[in-house]
Length: 114
Image 1: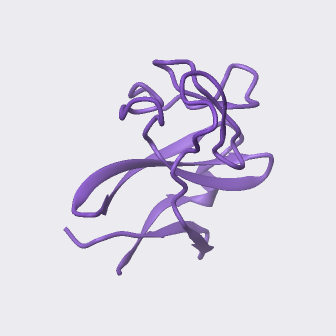
Image 2: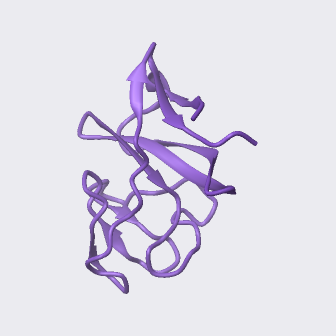
């Protein structure tokens, strides 16, 4: 499967994210990459309660204190490093992690061809 660069590491700052699009199972999907406590995290941008974007389209994924990922619509709270929902309507479910690698100062993921 081909790989695409979805973000430059220098563009990520704590609690700042970069959104991107990719294909899986023949469907275009949205994802986001961010830094949390110095670690890169990459997830599909879809709430586990209902299939809508976590950020409500405004590229805001973190709570005001920066400790958790929050679904802007339902208030579901996710642990950034694991993706586990710890509070809200989908408690116990986890965000879909996107496997990635970093090289040449960028984050790369696999995607299906268009």
